Length: 249
Image (cartoon, rainbow, N blue to C red; front, side, top):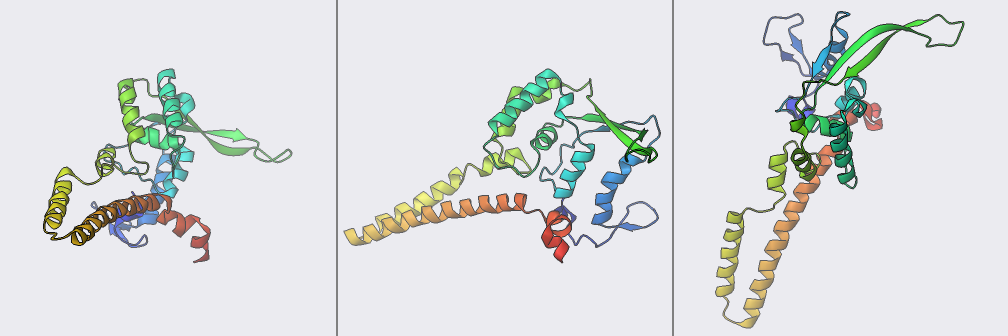
């Protein structure tokens, strides 16, 4: 969940739907849960993790950090999935990206993984310091995953999707520009204006005005693209919690 999905300030509390102590939580608590919940387990426990179909794929900066702790590695991919991932990286090498490509690939195609951890003794400090207790994380491929979900067609659809968009279907529609109905409406207005001209100079002015309308509409579409790109690059959580500007506040 992004801070924009929270729909209020990060420190504003919400109430649990079921009785619990404490009775409320805020966005900072929500962030902490993503880290702390995976530390609560028995020694024989394992976590099966898979992204939801309704997931918002514009991941905040703190979640990208979470991914480095608990996310999977492409080294566990079977050969055919690894081949698709290499193809995806190659075809998107020139595209701007604001998050790890492996995160985008796995979240969009809903590739699951199994996470476990154990307590080990480790020499964190040089001898003669004693051994330290540490957590050792392990990830494993889920053998029952249907590889058809990562077919060539799905990967091509992912490549053609606008980077940073939360829904590939919506982004493909928006990238097509104005709809046919909008185009015909604008065309009808332009034809009526040109038909009303009574001399060459007036016709010339109407024609220039028509071209300006098309230019203005194209400029508005370009501005929408810029806004979407800016939202994906400038993350509110990064500014508030992780960046130099956030530390200066």
